[in-house]
Length: 255
Image 1: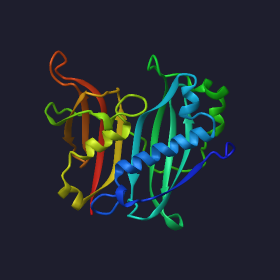
Image 2: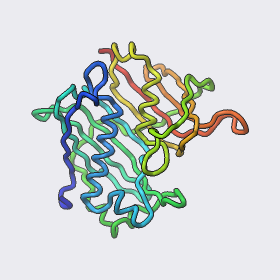
Image 3: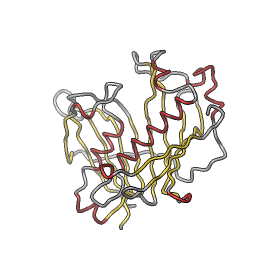
């Protein structure tokens, strides 16, 4: 396993993992991708459980998912994942999502950092696991989608505010990466999803938020049809503008 640079993991689109159209929720796919990243890292000696022994953990910095089609209810599908690059403070990890007979559903790109659990500061990845993380870099397998880009929102009026509760918090004690995705996608009504599919979804994570924080969502439509979302926590009071915790860019397509 450690000699194989690409990890492959199989899933089924269970009935409770699909939306009212019978297609896999983007948030469920996001969880699968993150789980595959964890499986792949653990099998090669640099997973979260190993890092926690030294008081470190992985955090997701960027994620871009581009899908031609989502798996339908009861369909089996697989996810390939591999490390494309390793820098001192960040690593690039890619994904490919396949259906039966090698059908390509889509691809994803992600950027990760390793942080110290006490200081919350990034650590040097090139010293991880005796610098052996670079042995798992795979440069031959293609990931033909653009890397996550810059996202900027100029709107100053929130379209929704949501308080963070128990189900939003993960093992690291902060709001789970995929929960932001789900809250962003909840900004659009059911009728919108009846006529549109998500073609590309990007998340850029800026800061952490915690239980009890109130997240406000700011939305802006672009000339190219994409929609940008900025999420800020605890807007108002002494910090009137709040603190940006993440940004998202969504490209929809008509069904």
